[in-house]
Amino acid sequence: MISFGLAAFFLVLTPGPAVLTVAGFGASYGFRRSVVFVLGIMLGANIVMLAVMSGLAAVLLSAPGLRLLLLAGSTAFLFYLAARIAFAGTRIAFIEARHPPGVLSAVVLQVLNPKAYAVNTALFTGFSFAPESLWFEIGAKLLIANLIWFPLHFLWLWAGVRLHALELSQRWQRVINLGMAGALVAVAVLSAVTLLFA
Image: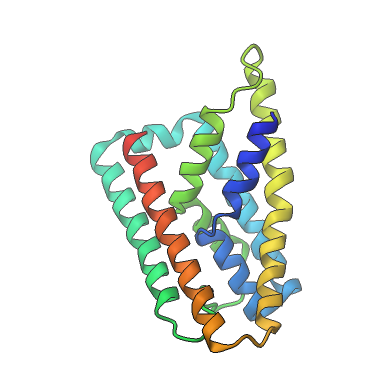
């Protein structure tokens, strides 16, 4: 159970599309106006968890053509985001927020997020701690994941708000951009490999 909790904690710290968007809305709209978006991200995360646990995601991904199409589209999207961040110059380049955050857009983002499927597949098919009671283990994993991910997403939101308030030098802004871009590329590659060979 402890190893599951630690894995859930460290996996959500990896900057994927959801957390970068949460931070971006925090930087663009502030904390209070972005809370609704975080709630949508968590709703979407639970939809993905249920899709993985029920086997629906496995059924959809078992069709070779559909699997490759979804994988290619999701990976291309992550590389696109990484390129936007890397080439943003000296500006802190969280995902640009053109519209006020909403629940539906957050749910859609999370449901289409390949990292969410890779993470949940790893968490819910591994880290067995109650093999004699499947329903207890599933319920416990859902509870633990939400207890960890909910505050961590709010931490990302707060980080976006705080980072926007800082007046960093151009050099440090470039370093942050390249670091975020590199993390997104790593997420794209890991997600693709995980889903391709799952």
